[in-house]
Each structure stands twice: as C-alpha cells, then as structure tokens.
Image (cartoon, rainbow, N blue to C red; front, side):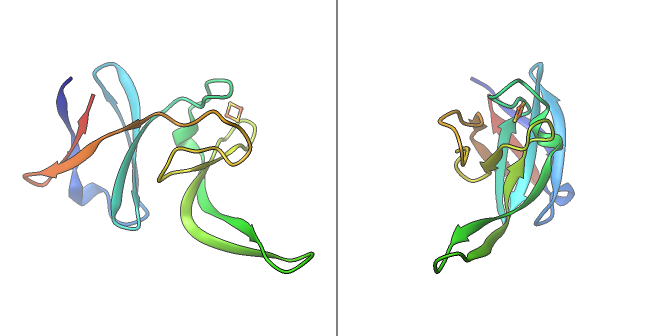
Length: 115
Ligand code: FES
C-alpha cells in the first residue's frame, strides 16, 4: 500500500471534483460537504467512467404520493445508465454493487490517497 499525494487541497473546495491517475488507476476526488472522498473511476455496472457523472441529491419518501429532495451534492449519477451512488458510502440506491472507495487524508496541504 502507498499513500500517494493526488492534488492540493485548495483545488477541492466544497462541491469540487478532481479526477487524476494514481498508480495507474483513474481516481475521482470529491469534496462532499467538507469530507474528501476518493473513488475509482469505474462504475460497477458496466465500467463507465462514473466520476464524470452529475452530482446531486436524491429523493426520500414522504407522505403518501409525495417525495422530498434531500442530501444535495451527496449522490453521483453514472453518465451511462443513471445508476445513483451515495458518495459517502459507495452504495448504489438500486443494486448491491458499490463504488470502490479509497482512504484519504490531508497532509501539508495535499490530499493523499491510500492505494
Ligand atoms: S455503467 Fe454505470 S450505470 Fe451502467
């Protein structure tokens, strides 16, 4: 395992996204409400570059026949078939397959990813 510097933390403001190749793997870094998340840029469905997808919230059930939009900026939508993934957990909302996460830390102003 290596702890690789990936990008200056200044390049990742809240809501920001950076995609880099680290140790031969394409990795997407997202600042989700102040928490930096690193995921492999491969969708577990059919291998799309999932980190290029839209980031948004999702709906939660409310009263009968009603839905509430919540958790804006915490879900990644795959650009190929629209699967929704929780950026914080990697869970897919409609399937058991998950995004691959990597541990991150900030040292000396740089985001590092444990590979
Ligand atoms: S490849 Fe991502 S949803 Fe199909």
